[in-house]
Image (cartoon, rainbow, N blue to C red; front, top):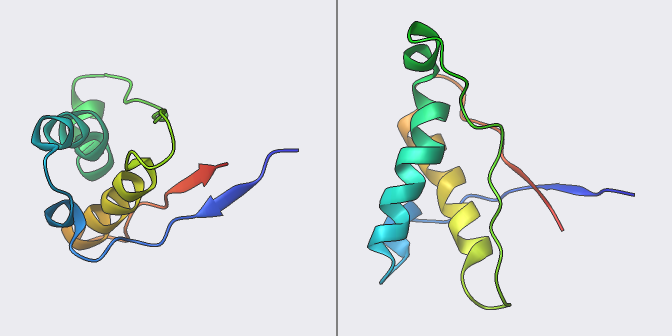
Length: 88
């Protein structure tokens, strides 16, 4: 059976992550932009991504990145923040 968990936002968001600026820029473009500005996608009749897959060995920051995304959506959205869940 599949089990999903709510994500606890990382204090400091992306500012708490070091040495992965290129990855953060890509995440902002592909994940945050559709979450925070869905009207742009509707205006151009584009389908935003339905999810993202983070993979790699233990200890590479996958969980921290997901928590930073949750923090960024919470701090940047004047509406209710996006709900972010992960499957383990």
